[in-house]
Length: 252
Ligand code: HEM
View 1 (cartoon, rainbow, N blue to C red):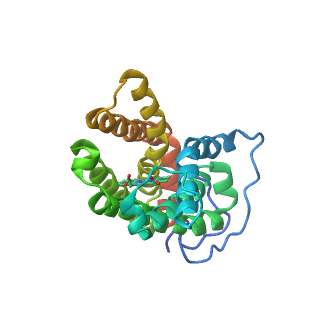
View 2: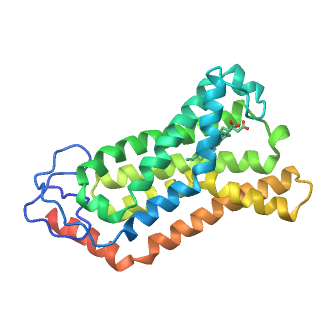
């Protein structure tokens, strides 16, 4: 029998069904923790990505025939489907994904974590794939600069691979691997938010932005997020190991 991959180190009273699909046998809810500190993580993550989400909403309004507020982008106007998919999926990925990191909420609502997780996986794959598509067909190395062009191909591909690895990990009951790869994928996705900050910092340092300075600022956004993700993955190795071993021992 496979274990409930969301046990999070707690030995359930009744052996539970598998992750992602089979209904859980144990519907017992874990009592809520006192305080609201657990909500700071999703709140902070959503705050980080507010500006890209707002600009995405404005772009969608414009493409739907509304006022032209955003900078002109002829390839997007000529072929809006990829950017519409990108923005819609990025919004769901960022918002739903943030709640997957609220540990208390996740423990109390395991069915929600599974259901929302499937949507986050699907949306995340579409964000990465549409981002790669737009890099290849909307923009060019001449218009964005070689560095940004290559970084988009690198991090777009890395996001897709990380989601695939995170999904494969949970299908085989590897909680530790699932958490690590989904954290990395989310960090890459939320690079869009950190890049607003690194872009602002770059504009303070460089008075006339160049393709190189823009590429460096965007790359810094992704690297900062990935560094924070690795720190977060390694922060509680004992807790993570307990969670994983609880899953493994339960599956025997
Ligand atoms: C949750 C994460 C993400 C959010 C919220 C987001 C948001 C957006 C938005 C709002 C746009 C439209 C910009 C405009 O209207 O001018 C856009 C465009 C784009 N995004 Fe993302 N994005 C995310 C992740 C990614 C990733 C991981 C890649 C990696 C390849 C990527 C690559 C692109 C590209 C290439 C464009 C087109 C840029 C252009 O043609 O000027 N995005 N994104």
